[in-house]
Length: 337
Image (cartoon, rainbow, N blue to C red; front, side, top):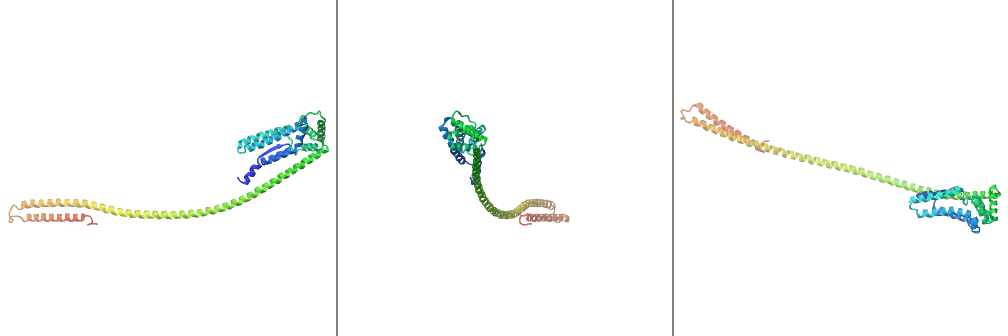
């Protein structure tokens, strides 16, 4: 937690509505110190209550709300890590203080009435002062003793505006002014310290921001370079793949072409060979049949046209056979393009 956060938490501890107005406490230590000062101020009241039991009513009432403060401090320290419990403790404490304030029984050391009675304790005695403050706070007390009557008389004069009234009010104002000056000086020093912390933190933030900008710029440049390199490598890889694919496709196409060509030539070769054999057989058979019929007579009796037919048949048969052989050779793979 930074100093600024700690100061922020401390400044918002609790604000109480007291007899002289609102009082803000920045920490439990500050409240403890204030409560000790209040007890020290009202020590004369405690002494008077010990000397006269009937004069103890005012001290009992004052001591009650001081005990509320002490109890709040102890409980807050005990449950400082439990936010919900702290809220309940603060709520109960404020209710107790407000009840005392509404009854008019809450009086602090900066109240002119308290200052008047303390001065009276010094001038007269603590018992008379206790009866006087009980009268001012409208706290019931036994008035059958001379000191009780004397205290009531001083309280009456005070209410009527005697000289001591003005002196007490002036002293109260001076004490209040001194306290506020001290608190303002302390807050001023705290604000200056916070301001210095803020200036230092802002400087650190600016330096961090500048460093971050530089780092982002470097990373951006590295990423742009890496991206360009990746694109170039990807394009090169795609180009190599395309080139390899084209070569493989061309080679595969050539192989497929010549394979198909070979299959076609084989089919043509077998067909031409079969046709040639069939024609040769038919030609030979025709020649034999014609020769059998023509050669049943003597040569002198053979008619010329018959010889011409035999010659034509033999010539045609030889020509067809040669053509078939030639076509078979041309149909063989690798010999015709």
